[in-house]
Length: 156
Image (cartoon, rainbow, N blue to C red):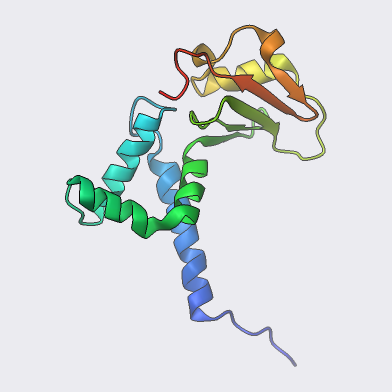
């Protein structure tokens, strides 16, 4: 009777690390106001650096960021600015460094999104006041809707 081989320890450690980082980011992304801003992201990164024993000096914070590397930093940032709303069957990707918020269905077989459902999702996470109100500027791209930031709140 053949048994499946066990994954190597390094693989299990890597999976645990990925899981722990994701949970850490999701668990603390609402802890650093103002939400949905690059300032909030920077506060999370500073908190993580300080929690890992770095001083608050600029060079220590820069060394921490460099140690994370671009791939991990990008993954953490995506998790930080992403929300899943199962009740609406929607995912929001709202990085203020991007020109618009992307709203897409959790179900990949879904069709074009209803603007009212998109607005409800934006309202639920507190983004609606920061978005362009004119829905004619919202772009429906198959099953994805792109909603531009208001200029006054973009990249804040």
